[in-house]
Length: 400
Image (cartoon, rainbow, N blue to C red; front, side):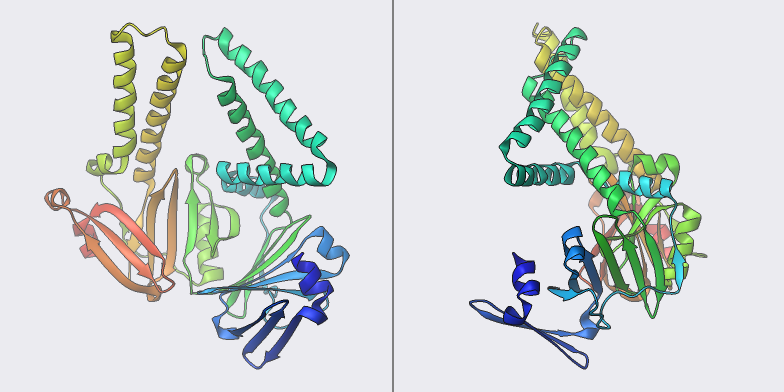
């Protein structure tokens, strides 16, 4: 609908003017809305071209600022200077590296949401029979899996098995979609910005302003095993599979962040309970309930026993994972750059940024942390982002 009003019927509903450093965008349907955007406020510019847009010679342009974004549609031959432009220095990942990045970047919940929306679109376009066929295939698979589990004396509700298989199919769908998104990936820099291009069916181009946001590396268990992780800036993947050496090269050559010569700060082993307290209590709770189940003579309750056993296994896995993250997390504080590692959910995020981006810092200690010599540091960046280094030695911080 938007592309019809704001591109095909653009001369009736849209007026775009570029007056020096000022971009004026006026949209009018029932209400006239005028947006004034200073070129210097743009921190990220993105063009997106779906297959339909390419057929009608159109592209969607999104201009991001620190306070929001502006979306407009242009013809393919319209090339104002605020659009993404390929730089001189270019880096292209290999196909296995793109597969790695797609695997790490595919999230289960996002995959479920995208898959559900896709099924809804299929039902609208092709009719409900296609939707019913897909659901029936998943339900039939769930029945077969339920029977196989019952043979192994594992009893799960059929609905739970159906939801699990639906989640797996959704993840695979999102994984394949992500592989297509990362096709023809290209990273380049020039003119004070970083350019990222990718896509096969839908084409994406992003231009990121340098030294205005942190570069983030996302580490999962698979990343710890392979010693590689994808890198992001402003929510855009800038490289799908970077080892420590490649990461340092990208930070230095494309983002101007030099990471050598700084002292590393790590959380000591005595802080393990502070990092792993939640899965530890979950493990104790599930174990106690399972023991109580057998003490009360209800050990034959297969569904309850299966759920509690699954809870024990998951909490033990999370405890081990959080412990590995604690051992791998490294932070660094120097005059030139700052690196902070922190765990969020089931992934470890490491942010790299010039020290000049820091707008404020807070060092916090509880009574117990004062006795153990540990502290938590929160650093605020100029773009209202907070980076946290948890349970690091206060003495190491003072030396840094």
